[in-house]
Amino acid sequence: MRERLTSDFGVYALSGLFSLVVFVVALAILARTLPGGLGVRRTGGLVVGYLLFVGVYTAAWYIYTGIDAREEV
Image (cartoon, rainbow, N blue to C red; front, side, top):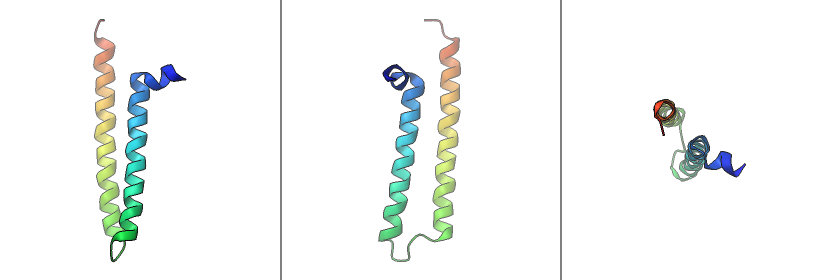
């Protein structure tokens, strides 16, 4: 289990999970602290922005693993 978590895949997966937790906590905080709460438009914009981030993160992960697989060690 430790080997899986310390591999490149594990590091990327854990950091992705951490970013998801931070995003959800931030949404909860914003929903409680904003005077009007989070409307559909605000929430939609934040979710679309986060999904764009996750898409770029996944693309970078895929590219990095492809480059790493082609290099000789």
